[in-house]
Image 1 (tube, rainbow, N blue to C red):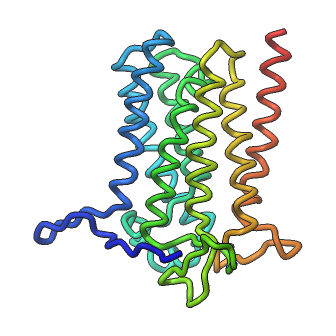
Image 2 (cartoon, rainbow, N blue to C red):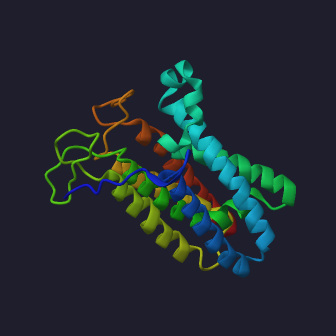
Length: 257
């Protein structure tokens, strides 16, 4: 298939440039806000609490995601050029760093409102995949994070990926971590569940889907494969999510029984 080359700048007004990558994050937060209002009407939350939580969560995603990328994936370069950390529009966001940022935001929101940490994480977990979906579309538009060379009929030649067709791994992640995980979590959370179970399912689902896609995604150039000629940094960071997610679900149901 032909890769649809899209100008990364969506709107340009004089020196002001609005990038598609940034718009994807805006669309993700807008989708989470809309879904949050729906969940609030079913969960005893107020619209003000939803808006406050999403504001803190957005800060956690952006700050944690960017710092996580700088720390986990591009530390030597960012030590030499620290101002590059501020260039969010160029891409380079770590989900795992963003997750740590969001967890910090949940802790702060918990202290502010008196709600338990898991009540907060269970509430917002079904909305997160919408943000992941748009974020991966942003990666696709930027022509980054492409997959391995492949002869499947839907493989694409990415401008920065050389002359050979590759797996559009960004779209795999948009589908699995975004649409599929959203469907699972939205259905699962439609009825009352033990405290912590929804959060556990999110960690488990994302960890499994990310681990799977990493098999067809090119590892980060600065690290390559960490072990066994297949283990990537993304897989290494996803393993704790799978383990912790399983633990949360088992613990939640045992505690509730």
